[in-house]
Length: 237
Image 1 (cartoon, rainbow, N blue to C red):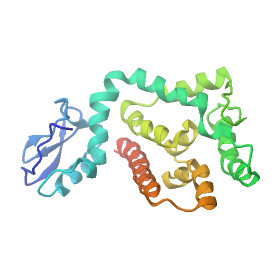
Image 2 (cartoon, helix red, strand yellow; image 1 turned 90 degrees about the vertical axis):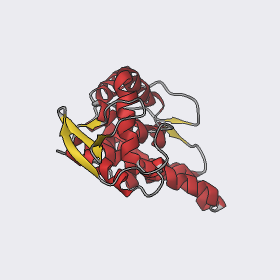
Image 3 (cartoon, rainbow, N blue to C red; image 1 turned 180 degrees about the horizontal axis):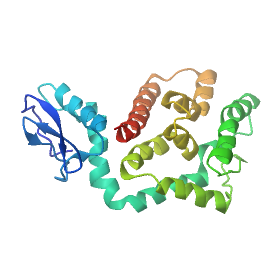
């Protein structure tokens, strides 16, 4: 977003219905994406979130405080033009889902992984019709072809707005299964994030906290929440 004006130049950000969707105007001037695409989103709720971010800016624009705007830009400029490629890339996570790769030692970690992850692999089998195999260590395991096809079809069924948020859920957690659980409302974002951090939590319990690592993790967790919220807002009429 290097083409954004560094200083605030408007008084009021407001939502307007436009071209079958909802846009945000700054003192009557339409917001556009970095690629100069008119920023028109599918729901009023999402447009209101974008407008609130613009209205909250002070003297200088800080894109890091505007997750809904950034995601909307990505949906229009990046995901929509290459939707099939994005879906293909995300579906590939089914081949190496975090939940399928387990430790062989220590016993405490083995137990924690099983207790945290086995129920969601069972959920994948039942709700997604996509059973996945578990392996120990880092050696890859071949997943059932039928499951991979099913997961690809489910990812491909997401529209570009959903896919934009889903992209971050998958990449931040490393798990297609957990991403679907959040997308379908079966897990709240914080619970899913905790499940994706079983290994890290175990290491902290053994070796203590790392302040720098925790700061990075907190940023990623907020991005995970933002992604889930973006999906929800893109579906709210």
